[in-house]
Amino acid sequence: MIRSRFALACLFALASCSGIQTPLAPAGEQAASQYSLFVLMLWVCGFVYVLVLGFLALAVSRVMRGAAADPVLDAPDRGLHRSLWVWAGIILIGLSVLAGGSFLVDRSLAAAQAREALEVRVTAHQWWWRIAYRDPATGGWVETANELHLPAGRTARIALGSADVIHSFWVPNVAGKMDVIPGRANAIDVTPHRLGWFRGQCAEFCGTQHAKMAFDVKVDTPAEFAAWLAAQARPAAALADTVAARGMQVVTQGQCAACHVVRGTAAAGRAGPDLTHVGTRRSIAAGLLPMNRGNLQGWIAQPQALKPGTMMPTVTLEPADADAAAHYLETLK
Ligand code: CUA
Image (cartoon, rainbow, N blue to C red; front, side, top):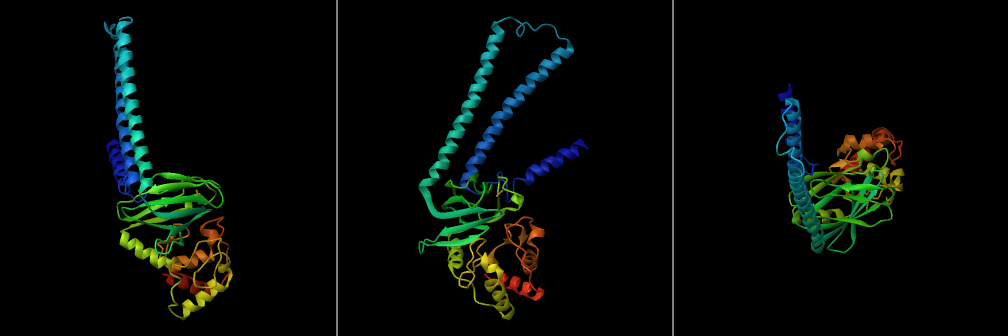
């Protein structure tokens, strides 16, 4: 029983080393240096912990054996003084190693500032993320939501702002976390080096749907990233068919347009996420559901059931219109 529990614990520890939301599998320069500090702390503190437990066990076993007086340990003053100096030395060396490691990691994080090659603005909302990129081609801003793309090997400066309460930006595989505070300009440098999908999550309690305030993170090659950004900068795709045409009418001329923007159409609301290329995203409602027509339709019909308290109101639509709207959104690639 105990052995199988131990095996299970080891399995969990190993599983956490390869996840898409873990600081134990670094995929970026900042996450890697913080991970090395974690390992250093683990070794230093683990060593002291084992030492303390060892001496505790020794003392207990001596008492239980009713051991006779130890000529060294029980000698007044000299032996006691010597062990006090040894322990003080161990503590001093341990703390110095930790302070040195912490200083080096802090300096390496600060050094990234000199290599910033991409400007990103992330604005936290209850309960989703507005994301904007400075387009190197035009100098203008390209907006999207809930999906952060980053080029591998390049340092991005992510400026963090909040539209309402305190949130926290956290993509553990790529970088540490940074609080997002209303009225305060915070920023974090990230330099991802492993391609793939990761998961970010708000890490500061910010209301009832704090747990459902996630986002997808995709690390691309620089060429893939440039192509993706150029596609995101374009206005909405042309209509695919007549159902999409009906959907466009519903979305861009109905209630949705009050809060959402679909660039290239009449929809120009600013309260909610930009939907111009919503069909390219991996998930909807800030990481809540995978992107597909059925989930889009469910989200439009029952936002308060899926995410109670969300600012997205329930919009009553005829079933055919709801399906057309979902189909239109899915085609916005
Ligand atoms: Cu936003 Cu928790």
